[in-house]
Image (cartoon, rainbow, N blue to C red; front, side):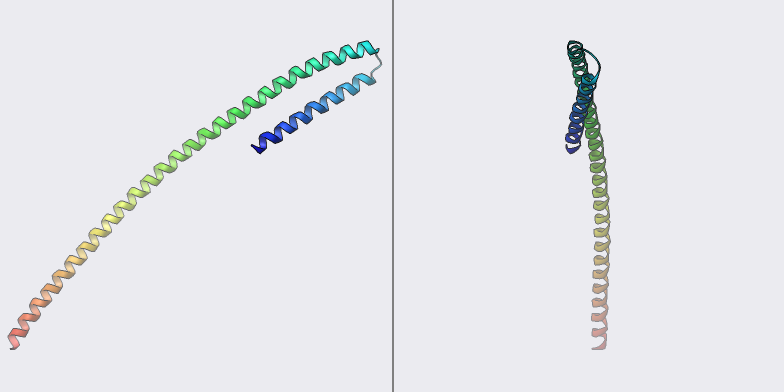
Length: 128
């Protein structure tokens, strides 16, 4: 938005400077007043036409740049969403694998404890 304001200010300054230069050149030229007024009127019409087309061109370029920026943003957003979904899925897979490993370790530990208890009971009854 700030770039658009800066460009608008530049464009206004350019047009005012052009008009000032043209009027000064015409006033200092060795012509009659009527000829000078006619030249000023013609130049004013010409400059108005050029300024209008320049403004239209600037706005169309700004619109095209805005559309391109929006398209790039949407593409980046879609890519980011896809990557986030992929990472989330990979995280889910790793989580499930770790749960399975922990469950296996718990089951193995329980079996070892039960085996140790049975072995301990058998030894205790053998000693008695």
